[in-house]
Image (cartoon, rainbow, N blue to C red; front, top):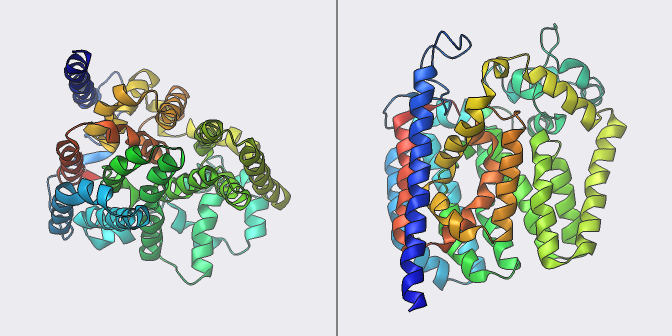
Amino acid sequence: MSLVLTRPRRIRGDLVALALLLAAIGVGFGFGIRLSGSAHFPGAPSTFGEWPVLAQWLPHVGPGTPFAVMLAVAAVAWGQELAQRLSWRRALLLGYATSVLWIFSLAMVDGWQRGVAGQLTSQDEYLSAVPGITDIGVMLRTFTSRILDFQPDSWTTHVSGHPPGATLVFVWLDRLGLSGGGWAGIVCILVGGLTAVAVPATVSLLGKESLARSTLPFIALFPGAVWIGVSADGLFAGVTASGIALLALRTRLAALAGGLLLGFGAFLSYGLALLGVVALTVCAVTRSWRTLGLAVLAAVAVAGVFAWAGFWWFDGYHLVVERYYQGIANDRPYWYWVWANLACLALAVGPAVAAGLPRAWRVPLVAAAAVVVLLADVSGLSKSEVERIWLPFAVWLVPAAGMLPRARWWLAGQAVTALMVNHLLLTNW
């Protein structure tokens, strides 16, 4: 009798969570549009553009539309079956291929130039600064002196807003002959797609193979793919997720490699230091304190190399906080974004993740990711644009979807969410 009563209750909980998600999105958009251009908020945009998602209302289709739709139909029809039937390595390989194709096809809805090649080349982005960096040593030694705005040699918005590791990735690509927005976009897609391997692999290595297999189609068809292929944050997600997965392997070499990736991740974006909560959770669940020690050692070594080269992380962080409030963030009201950010996140993770959270709060990885999101939210340093900024955090919430019954229907909801966002809104990323 208890089993009969438990299942309807849990299903009702899923639906309640979904209703709350839809309400958050609706209120976030409705309230934001009403605020837009309000005399009470002179800093607000005069047209719908960032309340709460940084985008414009513009229904459209593009070259990637038929491929995205066909891939979504195929993944919904056969994804769960293949994830359960194939060997684990083949399932992960298929998941990665699906993820890369999904990210690319969604990006191509806006065409090659706007969807892939042009996103990282605007005047505020990393690639605009690459031609002026002729000496990496000088760049690192003088990096903090150029963070603040309103000086002749200030870094562009995205370069100044991140530690130098983010810009160095694109400088290194340029030195390798992979210059330009096309190569940068392709690298972001290929590295971002690694989340579809790293997240389920970590879940499996923590002793939950059944959940890992159920999670695989959901992370491969992740709605946040709308932003993974067109922003450096997708690359950040792939790097840090791979680092956490390596920690779950619990070998000396993997621990050192994972620590190096996570250490470098902290020099890709200041906020990624919060992923230490997820990394610590992995080590705690596996009770592998040797792994934690080796990973910390490797991460400290990365910080040491940057410090030796002339960049001290904490100096950069304090200056970035000051720079943050020199710009539009000063006009974005905290009281709105502290909850509207969650509406942005809801679109990125999709309805299945929201519905699965009541079931998954005891899953350590999901709980750790939720803590990270809350810390980032209350900090006040993530006001707007979190649909891309929080991608490295959001991917660790996806296992919640793997706990749902009727997985095919929920997977379809994930696909529809991504397709609607990408075709109804012209996103800035």
